[in-house]
Amino acid sequence: MNIVVCLKQVPDTWAERKLNPSDSTLDRESVDGVMNEIDEYAVEEALRLTEAHGGEVTVLTMGPEKAAETIRKALSMGADKAVHLVDDALHGSDAVQTSYALAQVLRKIGFDLVILGSESTDARMGVLAAMLAERLSLPQLSLANKVEIDGTTARIQRQTDYGFDRVQASLPAVVSVVEKINEPRYPSFKGIMAAKKKPVTRLTVAEAEIDPAKVGLAAALTEVTGFAQRPPRQAGVIVKDEGDGGAKAAGFLAAQKFI
Amino acid sequence: MAEILVLADHTGGEVKKVTCELLTLARQFGEPAAVWIGSGAEAGQAKLAEYGAAKVYVAADGELVDYVVAPTAEVLAHLVAAKSPAAVLVAATAEGKEVAGRLAVKTDSGVLTDVVGLGDGLVAEQSIFGGAIIVQSRVRSGVPVIAVRPNSTAPVAAPAAATMEPVSVALSDTAKAAKITERVVAQRGERPDLTEAAIVISGGRGVGGAENFALIERLADSLGAAVGASRAATDAGWYPHQFQVGQTGKTVSPQLYMAIGISGAIQHRAGMQTSKTIIAINKDPEAPIFELADFGVVGDLFKVVPQLVDEIEKRK
Image (cartoon, rainbow over all chains, first blue to last red):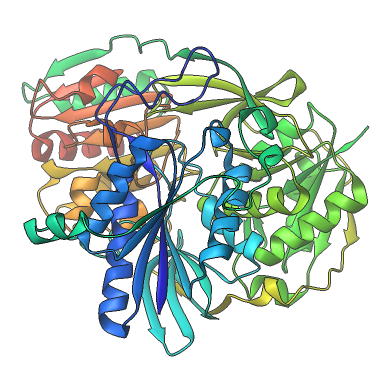
Protein backbone atom coordinates (compact mmCIF):
# COMPACT_ATOMS: atom_id res chain seq x y z
CA MET A 1 0.00 0.00 0.00
CA ASN A 2 1.47 3.32 -1.04
CA ILE A 3 0.67 6.19 1.25
CA VAL A 4 1.38 9.85 0.62
CA VAL A 5 1.43 12.10 3.67
CA CYS A 6 0.96 15.81 2.98
CA LEU A 7 3.05 17.93 5.32
CA LYS A 8 3.22 21.61 6.07
CA GLN A 9 6.05 23.53 7.64
CA VAL A 10 4.62 26.17 9.95
CA PRO A 11 6.12 28.87 12.14
CA ASP A 12 6.80 27.63 15.65
CA THR A 13 3.77 28.33 17.83
CA TRP A 14 6.03 29.44 20.64
CA ALA A 15 7.65 32.16 18.53
CA GLU A 16 6.14 35.54 17.73
CA ARG A 17 4.40 34.92 14.41
CA LYS A 18 4.06 37.76 11.93
CA LEU A 19 2.73 38.71 8.53
CA ASN A 20 4.88 40.42 5.90
CA PRO A 21 3.89 44.10 5.76
CA SER A 22 4.53 44.21 1.99
CA ASP A 23 2.12 41.50 0.81
CA SER A 24 0.34 40.30 3.97
CA THR A 25 1.66 36.77 3.54
CA LEU A 26 3.09 34.70 6.36
CA ASP A 27 6.56 35.78 7.44
CA ARG A 28 8.41 32.46 7.19
CA GLU A 29 11.88 33.96 7.42
CA SER A 30 11.97 35.59 10.85
CA VAL A 31 10.84 32.54 12.84
CA ASP A 32 11.87 28.92 13.11
CA GLY A 33 9.86 26.57 10.94
CA VAL A 34 8.65 23.30 12.42
CA MET A 35 6.58 20.43 11.10
CA ASN A 36 2.91 21.23 11.70
CA GLU A 37 2.20 19.39 14.91
CA ILE A 38 -0.82 17.40 13.75
CA ASP A 39 1.15 16.27 10.67
CA GLU A 40 3.39 14.25 12.98
CA TYR A 41 0.33 12.15 13.79
CA ALA A 42 -0.32 11.75 10.07
CA VAL A 43 3.24 10.51 9.48
CA GLU A 44 2.98 8.14 12.44
CA GLU A 45 -0.33 6.72 11.21
CA ALA A 46 1.12 6.16 7.75
CA LEU A 47 4.15 4.38 9.22
CA ARG A 48 1.95 2.16 11.37
CA LEU A 49 -0.27 1.26 8.42
CA THR A 50 2.65 0.32 6.18
CA GLU A 51 4.28 -1.61 9.05
CA ALA A 52 1.06 -3.63 9.32
CA HIS A 53 0.15 -3.94 5.65
CA GLY A 54 3.38 -3.34 3.75
CA GLY A 55 4.03 -0.59 1.25
CA GLU A 56 5.80 2.73 1.19
CA VAL A 57 5.34 6.14 2.75
CA THR A 58 6.06 9.18 0.60
CA VAL A 59 5.87 12.62 2.16
CA LEU A 60 4.81 15.57 0.07
CA THR A 61 5.21 19.20 0.95
CA MET A 62 4.67 22.44 -0.86
CA GLY A 63 6.77 25.27 0.47
CA PRO A 64 9.96 27.27 0.18
CA GLU A 65 13.50 25.82 0.40
CA LYS A 66 13.31 25.91 4.16
CA ALA A 67 10.49 23.34 4.14
CA ALA A 68 13.16 20.72 3.36
CA GLU A 69 13.78 20.64 7.14
CA THR A 70 10.27 19.30 7.67
CA ILE A 71 10.77 16.70 4.96
CA ARG A 72 13.96 15.59 6.71
CA LYS A 73 12.13 15.17 9.99
CA ALA A 74 9.49 12.95 8.39
CA LEU A 75 12.19 10.88 6.68
CA SER A 76 14.01 10.45 9.98
CA MET A 77 10.77 9.26 11.58
CA GLY A 78 10.77 6.51 8.94
CA ALA A 79 9.09 7.74 5.76
CA ASP A 80 10.72 6.23 2.66
CA LYS A 81 10.94 9.15 0.26
CA ALA A 82 9.77 12.66 -0.34
CA VAL A 83 8.49 15.06 -2.94
CA HIS A 84 9.11 18.77 -2.44
CA LEU A 85 7.01 21.08 -4.58
CA VAL A 86 9.09 24.23 -4.51
CA ASP A 87 8.67 27.20 -6.82
CA ASP A 88 8.52 30.95 -6.24
CA ALA A 89 5.39 30.99 -8.39
CA LEU A 90 3.53 29.30 -5.53
CA HIS A 91 4.19 32.08 -3.00
CA GLY A 92 1.00 33.47 -1.53
CA SER A 93 -1.30 30.72 -2.80
CA ASP A 94 -4.53 30.42 -0.82
CA ALA A 95 -6.29 27.22 0.22
CA VAL A 96 -8.15 26.66 -3.04
CA GLN A 97 -4.97 27.16 -5.05
CA THR A 98 -2.91 24.99 -2.72
CA SER A 99 -5.39 22.15 -3.06
CA TYR A 100 -5.12 22.47 -6.85
CA ALA A 101 -1.33 22.36 -6.80
CA LEU A 102 -1.17 19.39 -4.39
CA ALA A 103 -3.84 17.50 -6.34
CA GLN A 104 -1.73 17.88 -9.50
CA VAL A 105 1.29 16.38 -7.74
CA LEU A 106 -0.77 13.59 -6.16
CA ARG A 107 -2.14 12.61 -9.56
CA LYS A 108 1.40 12.44 -10.87
CA ILE A 109 2.93 10.35 -8.10
CA GLY A 110 -0.03 8.00 -7.47
CA PHE A 111 -1.14 6.51 -4.14
CA ASP A 112 -3.56 4.18 -2.38
CA LEU A 113 -4.08 6.54 0.52
CA VAL A 114 -3.38 10.21 1.19
CA ILE A 115 -3.08 11.18 4.86
CA LEU A 116 -3.07 14.73 6.21
CA GLY A 117 -3.22 16.37 9.61
CA SER A 118 -6.69 17.77 10.27
CA GLU A 119 -5.47 21.38 10.25
CA SER A 120 -2.33 23.48 10.40
CA THR A 121 -1.41 25.50 13.45
CA ASP A 122 -0.83 28.65 11.37
CA ALA A 123 -3.84 29.06 9.07
CA ARG A 124 -6.07 26.63 11.01
CA MET A 125 -8.60 26.36 8.19
CA GLY A 126 -9.05 22.59 8.33
CA VAL A 127 -10.23 22.44 4.71
CA LEU A 128 -7.46 20.76 2.77
CA ALA A 129 -8.51 17.11 3.14
CA ALA A 130 -12.05 17.99 2.01
CA MET A 131 -10.69 20.01 -0.91
CA LEU A 132 -8.33 17.23 -2.04
CA ALA A 133 -11.14 14.66 -1.83
CA GLU A 134 -13.26 16.98 -3.96
CA ARG A 135 -10.51 17.61 -6.53
CA LEU A 136 -9.49 13.98 -6.81
CA SER A 137 -13.09 12.66 -6.70
CA LEU A 138 -12.14 10.37 -3.82
CA PRO A 139 -13.81 9.43 -0.53
CA GLN A 140 -13.31 11.97 2.24
CA LEU A 141 -12.32 10.14 5.42
CA SER A 142 -11.54 13.18 7.50
CA LEU A 143 -11.15 13.97 11.20
CA ALA A 144 -10.22 10.37 11.93
CA ASN A 145 -9.30 9.33 15.45
CA LYS A 146 -8.98 5.70 14.30
CA VAL A 147 -8.06 4.24 10.90
CA GLU A 148 -8.34 0.61 9.84
CA ILE A 149 -7.49 -0.88 6.47
CA ASP A 150 -8.95 -4.21 5.43
CA GLY A 151 -7.94 -5.17 1.89
CA THR A 152 -9.23 -2.34 -0.27
CA THR A 153 -11.65 -1.06 2.37
CA ALA A 154 -10.83 1.76 4.77
CA ARG A 155 -12.81 2.30 7.96
CA ILE A 156 -12.38 5.28 10.22
CA GLN A 157 -13.91 6.81 13.29
CA ARG A 158 -14.71 10.40 12.39
CA GLN A 159 -14.60 12.64 15.46
CA THR A 160 -17.79 14.66 15.94
CA ASP A 161 -19.11 17.02 18.59
CA TYR A 162 -21.39 14.29 19.91
CA GLY A 163 -18.90 11.41 19.79
CA PHE A 164 -17.92 9.84 16.49
CA ASP A 165 -19.24 8.48 13.22
CA ARG A 166 -18.09 5.18 11.79
CA VAL A 167 -17.29 5.80 8.13
CA GLN A 168 -16.37 3.33 5.43
CA ALA A 169 -14.99 3.71 1.91
CA SER A 170 -13.01 1.95 -0.76
CA LEU A 171 -9.40 2.83 -1.48
CA PRO A 172 -7.96 5.05 -2.78
CA ALA A 173 -9.12 7.67 -0.28
CA VAL A 174 -8.13 10.89 1.45
CA VAL A 175 -7.76 10.64 5.23
CA SER A 176 -7.20 13.41 7.74
CA VAL A 177 -6.26 12.56 11.31
CA VAL A 178 -6.81 14.42 14.56
CA GLU A 179 -4.34 14.69 17.36
CA LYS A 180 -4.52 11.76 19.82
CA ILE A 181 -4.98 9.15 17.10
CA ASN A 182 -1.57 7.82 18.08
CA GLU A 183 1.69 8.73 19.79
CA PRO A 184 4.15 10.00 17.16
CA ARG A 185 7.58 8.42 17.44
CA TYR A 186 10.74 10.45 17.89
CA PRO A 187 13.35 10.07 15.17
CA SER A 188 16.06 7.66 16.34
CA PHE A 189 19.74 8.34 15.71
CA LYS A 190 19.67 5.56 13.13
CA GLY A 191 16.61 7.15 11.55
CA ILE A 192 18.30 10.52 11.36
CA MET A 193 21.36 9.03 9.67
CA ALA A 194 19.27 6.96 7.26
CA ALA A 195 17.18 10.01 6.30
CA LYS A 196 20.21 11.62 4.70
CA LYS A 197 20.30 8.95 2.03
CA LYS A 198 16.60 8.83 1.26
CA PRO A 199 15.45 10.22 -2.09
CA VAL A 200 13.88 13.67 -2.21
CA THR A 201 12.37 14.64 -5.55
CA ARG A 202 12.09 18.36 -6.15
CA LEU A 203 9.35 19.50 -8.48
CA THR A 204 8.78 22.90 -10.02
CA VAL A 205 5.37 24.16 -11.03
CA ALA A 206 6.14 23.26 -14.65
CA GLU A 207 7.34 19.76 -13.77
CA ALA A 208 4.20 19.12 -11.75
CA GLU A 209 2.07 20.31 -14.67
CA ILE A 210 0.56 23.07 -12.59
CA ASP A 211 -0.84 25.98 -14.56
CA PRO A 212 1.20 28.95 -13.26
CA ALA A 213 -1.75 31.27 -13.95
CA LYS A 214 -3.77 29.42 -11.31
CA VAL A 215 -1.37 29.71 -8.37
CA GLY A 216 0.38 32.42 -6.39
CA LEU A 217 -0.61 35.64 -4.73
CA ALA A 218 -1.67 37.51 -7.88
CA ALA A 219 -4.19 34.83 -8.83
CA ALA A 220 -5.41 34.12 -5.29
CA LEU A 221 -9.18 33.90 -4.87
CA THR A 222 -8.97 35.68 -1.53
CA GLU A 223 -6.96 38.68 -0.42
CA VAL A 224 -5.90 40.21 2.84
CA THR A 225 -6.87 43.89 2.80
CA GLY A 226 -5.40 44.82 6.16
CA PHE A 227 -4.09 43.54 9.45
CA ALA A 228 -3.16 44.85 12.85
CA GLN A 229 -1.90 43.66 16.19
CA ARG A 230 -4.79 42.96 18.55
CA PRO A 231 -4.88 45.65 21.25
CA PRO A 232 -3.86 44.12 24.58
CA ARG A 233 -6.69 43.23 26.94
CA GLN A 234 -7.21 45.64 29.78
CA ALA A 235 -5.66 44.39 32.97
CA GLY A 236 -8.23 42.65 35.14
CA VAL A 237 -8.74 42.37 38.86
CA ILE A 238 -6.69 39.59 40.42
CA VAL A 239 -7.43 38.64 44.02
CA LYS A 240 -5.67 36.22 46.33
CA ASP A 241 -7.94 33.63 47.93
CA GLU A 242 -8.23 34.41 51.64
CA GLY A 243 -11.01 31.91 52.16
CA ASP A 244 -13.40 34.11 50.17
CA GLY A 245 -12.08 33.63 46.61
CA GLY A 246 -15.15 31.70 45.44
CA ALA A 247 -17.49 34.29 46.93
CA LYS A 248 -15.54 37.09 45.26
CA ALA A 249 -15.70 35.31 41.90
CA ALA A 250 -19.47 34.93 42.39
CA GLY A 251 -19.64 38.66 43.15
CA PHE A 252 -17.89 39.39 39.85
CA LEU A 253 -20.27 37.07 37.98
CA ALA A 254 -23.25 38.82 39.57
CA ALA A 255 -21.89 42.28 38.74
CA GLN A 256 -21.45 41.17 35.12
CA LYS A 257 -25.00 39.76 35.19
CA PHE A 258 -23.95 36.17 34.51
CA ILE A 259 -25.87 35.11 37.64
CA MET B 1 -31.83 41.94 -3.83
CA ALA B 2 -29.52 38.99 -4.16
CA GLU B 3 -29.90 36.06 -1.83
CA ILE B 4 -27.42 35.09 0.83
CA LEU B 5 -27.47 31.34 1.36
CA VAL B 6 -27.18 30.27 4.98
CA LEU B 7 -26.54 26.59 5.64
CA ALA B 8 -28.75 25.69 8.61
CA ASP B 9 -27.13 23.77 11.45
CA HIS B 10 -29.68 21.61 13.18
CA THR B 11 -30.17 18.50 15.29
CA GLY B 12 -33.49 16.77 15.70
CA GLY B 13 -35.39 19.60 13.99
CA GLU B 14 -33.92 22.15 16.39
CA VAL B 15 -32.13 25.08 14.76
CA LYS B 16 -28.79 25.85 16.37
CA LYS B 17 -28.08 29.29 17.69
CA VAL B 18 -25.24 29.83 15.23
CA THR B 19 -27.75 29.64 12.37
CA CYS B 20 -29.75 32.51 13.91
CA GLU B 21 -26.47 34.43 14.14
CA LEU B 22 -25.69 33.75 10.47
CA LEU B 23 -29.19 34.84 9.40
CA THR B 24 -28.73 38.04 11.41
CA LEU B 25 -25.41 38.69 9.63
CA ALA B 26 -26.80 37.75 6.22
CA ARG B 27 -29.54 40.40 6.43
CA GLN B 28 -26.92 43.14 6.09
CA PHE B 29 -25.86 41.88 2.68
CA GLY B 30 -28.95 40.52 0.97
CA GLU B 31 -32.03 38.39 1.41
CA PRO B 32 -31.28 35.46 3.71
CA ALA B 33 -32.26 32.06 2.34
CA ALA B 34 -31.69 29.13 4.65
CA VAL B 35 -30.62 25.78 3.25
CA TRP B 36 -31.89 22.75 5.15
CA ILE B 37 -30.29 19.39 4.53
CA GLY B 38 -32.10 16.30 5.84
CA SER B 39 -35.36 15.87 7.72
CA GLY B 40 -37.03 18.14 10.26
CA ALA B 41 -37.34 21.36 8.24
CA GLU B 42 -41.00 21.79 9.27
CA ALA B 43 -39.95 21.79 12.92
CA GLY B 44 -37.22 24.35 12.26
CA GLN B 45 -39.21 26.66 10.00
CA ALA B 46 -40.59 28.94 12.74
CA LYS B 47 -37.13 29.69 14.10
CA LEU B 48 -35.70 30.39 10.64
CA ALA B 49 -38.64 32.73 9.97
CA GLU B 50 -38.12 34.51 13.28
CA TYR B 51 -34.51 35.33 12.38
CA GLY B 52 -35.24 36.58 8.89
CA ALA B 53 -35.04 33.72 6.41
CA ALA B 54 -37.15 34.79 3.41
CA LYS B 55 -36.87 31.30 1.98
CA VAL B 56 -35.89 27.86 3.12
CA TYR B 57 -34.48 25.54 0.51
CA VAL B 58 -35.21 22.05 1.76
CA ALA B 59 -33.18 19.09 0.54
CA ALA B 60 -34.88 16.37 2.55
CA ASP B 61 -33.74 13.24 0.73
CA GLY B 62 -32.62 10.83 3.45
CA GLU B 63 -29.61 9.80 1.39
CA LEU B 64 -28.04 13.23 1.85
CA VAL B 65 -27.07 12.62 5.45
CA ASP B 66 -25.70 9.11 4.91
CA TYR B 67 -22.34 10.28 3.57
CA VAL B 68 -19.54 12.53 4.79
CA VAL B 69 -19.86 16.23 3.83
CA ALA B 70 -19.85 15.84 0.03
CA PRO B 71 -23.67 15.66 -0.45
CA THR B 72 -24.16 18.95 1.42
CA ALA B 73 -21.56 20.61 -0.79
CA GLU B 74 -23.35 19.27 -3.89
CA VAL B 75 -26.70 20.70 -2.77
CA LEU B 76 -25.09 24.07 -2.09
CA ALA B 77 -23.26 24.06 -5.43
CA HIS B 78 -26.57 23.31 -7.15
CA LEU B 79 -28.20 26.28 -5.37
CA VAL B 80 -25.25 28.57 -6.15
CA ALA B 81 -25.69 27.76 -9.84
CA ALA B 82 -29.48 28.06 -9.77
CA LYS B 83 -29.93 31.12 -7.52
CA SER B 84 -26.72 33.15 -8.02
CA PRO B 85 -26.47 34.18 -4.37
CA ALA B 86 -24.19 37.03 -3.29
CA ALA B 87 -22.51 34.76 -0.74
CA VAL B 88 -22.82 31.48 1.12
CA LEU B 89 -22.50 31.48 4.90
CA VAL B 90 -21.83 28.39 6.98
CA ALA B 91 -20.94 27.87 10.63
CA ALA B 92 -17.19 27.54 11.17
CA THR B 93 -17.47 24.15 12.83
CA ALA B 94 -15.10 21.37 11.76
CA GLU B 95 -17.75 19.99 9.43
CA GLY B 96 -19.00 23.41 8.27
CA LYS B 97 -15.49 24.35 7.19
CA GLU B 98 -15.15 21.11 5.23
CA VAL B 99 -18.42 21.88 3.45
CA ALA B 100 -17.08 25.36 2.69
CA GLY B 101 -13.84 23.93 1.32
CA ARG B 102 -15.56 21.54 -1.06
CA LEU B 103 -18.04 24.17 -2.18
CA ALA B 104 -15.23 26.63 -2.92
CA VAL B 105 -13.46 24.06 -5.11
CA LYS B 106 -16.71 23.12 -6.88
CA THR B 107 -17.63 26.72 -7.65
CA ASP B 108 -14.07 27.99 -8.16
CA SER B 109 -14.63 30.53 -5.42
CA GLY B 110 -12.57 31.96 -2.63
CA VAL B 111 -13.23 30.70 0.89
CA LEU B 112 -12.64 32.36 4.25
CA THR B 113 -12.94 30.44 7.50
CA ASP B 114 -13.12 31.29 11.20
CA VAL B 115 -14.54 34.70 10.42
CA VAL B 116 -15.52 36.70 13.50
CA GLY B 117 -17.09 39.71 11.78
CA LEU B 118 -18.35 40.85 8.38
CA GLY B 119 -18.31 44.45 7.16
CA ASP B 120 -19.10 46.44 4.01
CA GLY B 121 -18.32 44.59 0.80
CA LEU B 122 -18.28 41.32 2.77
CA VAL B 123 -14.87 42.20 4.17
CA ALA B 124 -14.26 39.58 6.83
CA GLU B 125 -12.45 39.95 10.09
CA GLN B 126 -10.37 37.03 11.30
CA SER B 127 -8.26 36.56 14.36
CA ILE B 128 -5.03 34.65 13.71
CA PHE B 129 -1.90 33.38 15.44
CA GLY B 130 -3.65 32.62 18.67
CA GLY B 131 -5.62 35.86 18.53
CA ALA B 132 -2.50 38.05 18.37
CA ILE B 133 -3.33 39.58 14.97
CA ILE B 134 -6.61 40.78 13.51
CA VAL B 135 -6.83 40.40 9.73
CA GLN B 136 -9.29 41.87 7.25
CA SER B 137 -9.75 39.83 4.12
CA ARG B 138 -12.18 39.34 1.30
CA VAL B 139 -13.04 36.95 -1.46
CA ARG B 140 -12.22 38.43 -4.84
CA SER B 141 -13.16 35.57 -7.12
CA GLY B 142 -16.36 33.54 -7.46
CA VAL B 143 -19.20 33.47 -4.92
CA PRO B 144 -17.77 34.21 -1.47
CA VAL B 145 -17.93 31.14 0.75
CA ILE B 146 -17.61 32.31 4.32
CA ALA B 147 -17.42 30.18 7.47
CA VAL B 148 -18.33 32.26 10.51
CA ARG B 149 -17.44 31.28 14.06
CA PRO B 150 -20.31 30.70 16.47
CA ASN B 151 -20.83 33.57 18.94
CA SER B 152 -19.42 36.15 16.50
CA THR B 153 -22.60 38.21 16.54
CA ALA B 154 -25.71 38.42 18.71
CA PRO B 155 -28.76 36.90 17.03
CA VAL B 156 -31.48 39.51 16.47
CA ALA B 157 -35.01 38.53 15.44
CA ALA B 158 -36.49 40.10 12.28
CA PRO B 159 -39.45 38.01 11.13
CA ALA B 160 -39.70 36.93 7.49
CA ALA B 161 -41.74 34.41 5.54
CA ALA B 162 -39.39 31.40 5.50
CA THR B 163 -41.19 30.06 2.44
CA MET B 164 -40.25 26.44 1.99
CA GLU B 165 -38.97 25.38 -1.41
CA PRO B 166 -38.04 21.75 -1.97
CA VAL B 167 -34.73 21.06 -3.68
CA SER B 168 -33.87 17.80 -5.33
CA VAL B 169 -30.31 16.96 -6.29
CA ALA B 170 -29.18 13.71 -7.87
CA LEU B 171 -26.04 12.87 -5.95
CA SER B 172 -22.91 11.99 -7.89
CA ASP B 173 -21.21 8.68 -7.16
CA THR B 174 -18.28 10.61 -5.68
CA ALA B 175 -20.56 12.21 -3.12
CA LYS B 176 -21.54 8.72 -2.00
CA ALA B 177 -17.96 7.49 -1.61
CA ALA B 178 -17.60 7.85 2.18
CA LYS B 179 -20.55 6.15 3.86
CA ILE B 180 -21.51 6.79 7.46
CA THR B 181 -22.35 3.35 8.82
CA GLU B 182 -23.06 4.34 12.43
CA ARG B 183 -23.33 7.47 14.57
CA VAL B 184 -22.02 6.93 18.06
CA VAL B 185 -23.26 9.42 20.64
CA ALA B 186 -21.18 9.72 23.78
CA GLN B 187 -23.22 10.32 26.92
CA ARG B 188 -22.44 13.85 27.99
CA GLY B 189 -25.72 14.96 29.50
CA GLU B 190 -27.63 18.04 28.50
CA ARG B 191 -24.80 20.54 28.27
CA PRO B 192 -24.67 22.97 25.35
CA ASP B 193 -22.25 22.47 22.46
CA LEU B 194 -18.78 23.66 23.32
CA THR B 195 -18.36 26.01 20.36
CA GLU B 196 -21.87 27.46 20.67
CA ALA B 197 -22.13 27.84 24.43
CA ALA B 198 -22.50 31.30 25.95
CA ILE B 199 -20.45 30.13 28.92
CA VAL B 200 -17.55 27.68 28.86
CA ILE B 201 -15.86 26.26 31.97
CA SER B 202 -12.52 24.59 31.23
CA GLY B 203 -10.27 22.53 33.44
CA GLY B 204 -6.56 21.94 33.04
CA ARG B 205 -3.56 20.30 34.60
CA GLY B 206 -4.44 21.72 38.02
CA VAL B 207 -7.62 19.64 38.10
CA GLY B 208 -5.32 16.71 38.75
CA GLY B 209 -7.38 13.74 37.54
CA ALA B 210 -10.35 12.48 35.57
CA GLU B 211 -12.51 12.08 38.69
CA ASN B 212 -11.96 15.72 39.65
CA PHE B 213 -13.57 16.87 36.40
CA ALA B 214 -16.85 16.24 38.24
CA LEU B 215 -16.12 19.51 40.03
CA ILE B 216 -15.69 21.35 36.72
CA GLU B 217 -18.93 19.77 35.48
CA ARG B 218 -20.76 20.82 38.67
CA LEU B 219 -19.71 24.43 38.17
CA ALA B 220 -20.64 24.23 34.48
CA ASP B 221 -24.08 22.84 35.29
CA SER B 222 -24.71 25.57 37.88
CA LEU B 223 -24.25 28.11 35.07
CA GLY B 224 -25.77 26.12 32.18
CA ALA B 225 -22.30 26.08 30.63
CA ALA B 226 -20.32 23.77 28.38
CA VAL B 227 -17.23 21.98 29.69
CA GLY B 228 -13.87 22.31 28.01
CA ALA B 229 -10.41 21.01 28.81
CA SER B 230 -6.85 22.09 28.17
CA ARG B 231 -4.49 19.94 26.20
CA ALA B 232 -2.70 18.86 29.36
CA ALA B 233 -5.99 17.44 30.65
CA THR B 234 -6.93 15.64 27.44
CA ASP B 235 -3.36 14.35 26.95
CA ALA B 236 -3.58 12.84 30.42
CA GLY B 237 -6.84 11.18 29.40
CA TRP B 238 -8.89 13.04 32.04
CA TYR B 239 -11.41 14.36 29.54
CA PRO B 240 -12.23 13.40 25.91
CA HIS B 241 -10.34 15.09 23.10
CA GLN B 242 -13.42 16.57 21.41
CA PHE B 243 -13.67 18.94 24.39
CA GLN B 244 -10.12 20.23 24.03
CA VAL B 245 -9.89 24.00 23.74
CA GLY B 246 -6.79 25.37 22.08
CA GLN B 247 -4.67 25.46 19.01
CA THR B 248 -5.03 21.79 18.18
CA GLY B 249 -8.57 21.59 19.54
CA LYS B 250 -11.68 23.76 19.46
CA THR B 251 -11.72 27.51 19.28
CA VAL B 252 -14.39 29.08 21.45
CA SER B 253 -15.57 32.63 21.76
CA PRO B 254 -18.19 32.63 24.53
CA GLN B 255 -19.55 35.52 26.58
CA LEU B 256 -17.81 34.05 29.60
CA TYR B 257 -14.82 31.72 29.72
CA MET B 258 -13.53 30.32 32.99
CA ALA B 259 -10.07 28.73 32.99
CA ILE B 260 -9.62 26.55 36.04
CA GLY B 261 -6.23 25.12 36.85
CA ILE B 262 -5.02 26.17 33.40
CA SER B 263 -1.72 28.04 33.14
CA GLY B 264 -2.59 29.65 29.81
CA ALA B 265 0.17 28.58 27.42
CA ILE B 266 -0.11 29.96 23.87
CA GLN B 267 -1.46 26.55 22.79
CA HIS B 268 -4.50 27.15 25.02
CA ARG B 269 -4.85 30.89 24.51
CA ALA B 270 -5.18 30.33 20.76
CA GLY B 271 -8.50 28.63 21.44
CA MET B 272 -10.13 31.09 23.85
CA GLN B 273 -8.49 34.49 23.53
CA THR B 274 -11.49 36.09 21.82
CA SER B 275 -13.86 35.22 24.68
CA LYS B 276 -15.70 38.35 25.86
CA THR B 277 -15.08 37.93 29.59
CA ILE B 278 -12.40 35.70 31.06
CA ILE B 279 -12.10 34.43 34.62
CA ALA B 280 -9.09 32.47 35.81
CA ILE B 281 -8.62 30.38 38.93
CA ASN B 282 -5.08 29.13 39.46
CA LYS B 283 -2.78 28.65 42.42
CA ASP B 284 0.23 30.07 40.55
CA PRO B 285 0.15 33.88 40.63
CA GLU B 286 2.64 33.92 37.73
CA ALA B 287 0.40 31.85 35.41
CA PRO B 288 0.12 33.65 32.05
CA ILE B 289 -3.65 33.10 32.03
CA PHE B 290 -3.93 35.99 34.53
CA GLU B 291 -2.66 38.37 31.81
CA LEU B 292 -5.89 37.69 29.92
CA ALA B 293 -8.24 37.51 32.87
CA ASP B 294 -10.84 40.17 33.60
CA PHE B 295 -11.09 38.60 37.01
CA GLY B 296 -8.69 36.16 38.58
CA VAL B 297 -8.44 34.26 41.83
CA VAL B 298 -5.03 33.08 42.97
CA GLY B 299 -5.83 30.07 45.10
CA ASP B 300 -6.53 26.37 45.39
CA LEU B 301 -9.25 25.46 42.91
CA PHE B 302 -10.51 22.71 45.24
CA LYS B 303 -11.38 25.41 47.78
CA VAL B 304 -12.40 28.22 45.44
CA VAL B 305 -14.61 26.29 43.02
CA PRO B 306 -16.87 24.55 45.60
CA GLN B 307 -17.41 27.91 47.30
CA LEU B 308 -18.19 29.50 43.95
CA VAL B 309 -20.75 26.77 43.15
CA ASP B 310 -22.40 27.28 46.58
CA GLU B 311 -22.56 31.05 46.04
CA ILE B 312 -24.08 30.62 42.58
CA GLU B 313 -26.71 28.22 43.95
CA LYS B 314 -27.49 30.66 46.80
CA ARG B 315 -28.03 33.55 44.41
CA LYS B 316 -30.37 31.61 42.12
